[in-house]
Length: 108
Image (cartoon, rainbow, N blue to C red; front, top):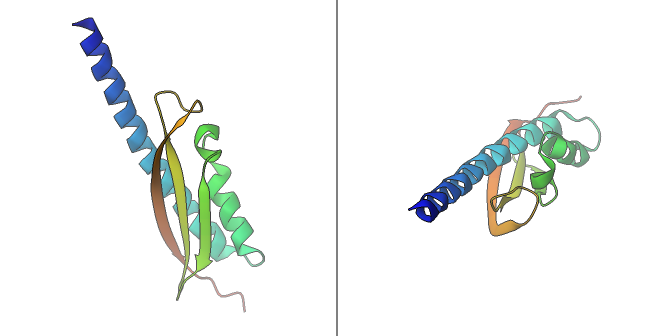
């Protein structure tokens, strides 16, 4: 019975990591979009820096950030890899996307 209980605990832990990755990706995309929309110079660099600023190292190392200007929004997409059991050791081949947009600020 003990191995079965340990297996259930490991599955639950992995589910928690997947949920946490969703939360991190969404928050990183939101911060990135806000930073990019408010930057007067080099909005792409500000967007990328904003996305990676608060991410834990295990998630930041494999993060993919894409930023760009939409019609009237500055949009950011952050893709994070889901860690397996221990963040930082190795990742699943699953990417979790977080997308956000922020209204463009006029600098004129």
